[in-house]
Length: 88
Image (cartoon, rainbow, N blue to C red; front, side, top):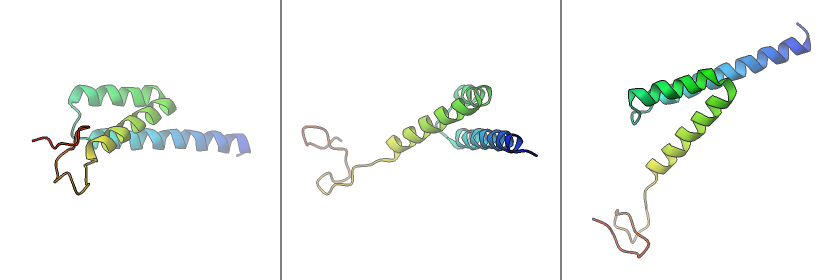
């Protein structure tokens, strides 16, 4: 194998691994319904490199926003609004 073939093989392997990882993220996400799962899987596998990067970043940003909680001592476990009061 020459260097071009090795590069192409590595690139194809990288794209396949990214698509596989993105597919696992989608299939393990309990917040998605069947339609969203199918559409996102189609995006990943029909747009090989770009699709997997977009879907992984979207799922990761969604995961970050849903798992953040306010841990400040004045909140008492409640979300604090901009006026500083707690919500019930």
